[in-house]
Amino acid sequence: MRYRFFYSIIISCLLFFGSNSYSADLENGKELFKFCTLCHGKVGQGVIGGDFPKIGGLPEYYLAAQIDEFVAENRFNPAMVTIGRLDSMTDKEKADLAAYIASIDIQKQAPTLTIPTFTGNAKKGKKLYKGDCKTCHGKKAEGRVKKKAPPTAWQYSEYLSRQIDFFKAKDRIHDNDPEDETFDDYSKEEIIDILTFISTLDD
Ligand code: HEC
Ligand code: HEC
Image 1: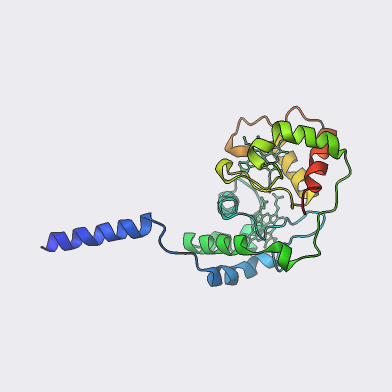
Image 2: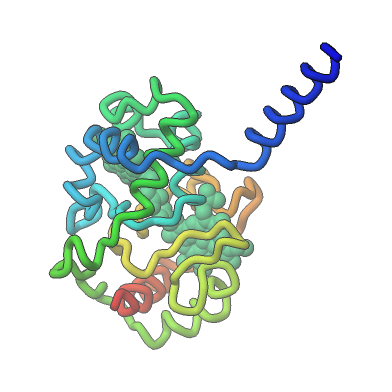
């Protein structure tokens, strides 16, 4: 009898933790988000010019993965990890935080915010984007869960440009593939054309 009792407790625990049956605590996530607003803005709108990226409304899968990347220093920004207190948060807290940030409706919270259009050739950029980026980032740069690729349509062009420089220098890994060569053959001008096309997609 006793064994059966313990056995059923263990099974219940496995079911509970294995099924993701707890839902994220958005109130707790909102509370923790206060550590992020100093740099990312009150609703995660970032700063025009892209020194601080927009994060409000990014998908949960991407936020959670990137938070881990920063804590592990695969993406290097110690000030964010310390001031944002990410280094002392539990996994549950980080999950609550990612769920809250993902739940922010940025269009509603910051309706006047638009991405200034970048200055390259959008037509050329569209062609390159369709050939090389669309499969993962989506037709309208809305991101694709299946590819774990983030939306880029409403992100500041300067921020995206900086990330591409990091990818090229292997200071950040693109598509979780250390051998990734996506950007190797593009000139600076072509990258600007692609980013110009992306910056026309934010409505
Ligand atoms: C001290 C300023 C600062 C604070 C505080 C801060 N961040 Fe950041 N964050 C940055 C900067 C700067 C970047 C861009 C880094 C880069 O260029 O790689 C960034 C990038 C990010 C990104 C990547 C966005 C993307 O599209 O890939 C995420 C996600 C993020 N921050 C989440 C958070 C969260 C969550 C918090 C609060 C716990 C937080 N940040 C607090 C400065 C900060
Ligand atoms: C095979 C899939 C794939 C293709 C093709 C692809 N990407 Fe990505 N991209 C990703 C993934 C996955 C990420 C998330 C980064 C990571 O792996 O941590 C990403 C991240 C990015 C980021 C960083 C966004 C942010 O918010 O920080 C930029 C910028 C980007 N990609 C641009 C491009 C461009 C431009 C192209 C086409 C020239 C392209 N990607 C093609 C999968 C892809």
